Image (cartoon, rainbow, N blue to C red):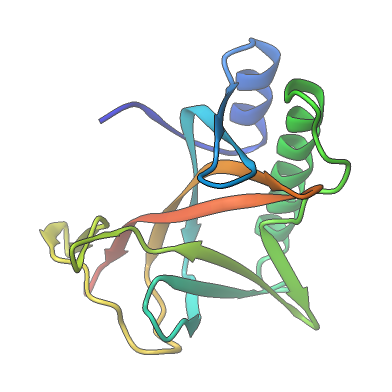
Amino acid sequence: MSERFILNSETLHDLISNDMLKLLEQPQRGSGTNYFFIPNIALRLYNPKITWIDPYKKHMSFSFNKFDNIHLYTLLKHINTSLSTFYKKTAYNPTHYIHSFMYEKGNYFYIKCYLPNTNGKYQINSFFDSVEESFVIPKLNYTFDSVIIDIKNIWKKDNQAGFNLELKETYIKTT
């Protein structure tokens, strides 16, 4: 497995200023373009609450209270802005507006991510008291101790762009 950088303000700044972060451009099937981040970059989120699971179990959304998580909220806004700016400076013919990887409503912000799945088996590392187990989608309103979400790429199609996020690891501790 390739190296993954868990982002914070300093790590992201270092990756960009030291010219370590790159975009790999690949065409989408049909039309559009994907700009993959090299090396892998990710977010570690603590106490994310599941607030939505799509009917096909391909996507999940986590929520956070803005006031209880003001530092996380500020960090995620900074990461979103920094990666959007990096894309606009680096990509060939970038779009002006990029949809944020966060959605805000009232006192909450939400992060939607893809659940990687091959032949009915989730490609998500799940740890229960430090023991790896098969990933099983929990019920709504369940709160993980922490998760790691990869920021895979920025997609561009028809003068629109947005982030693709993938859930990669979940952690649950009972003690």
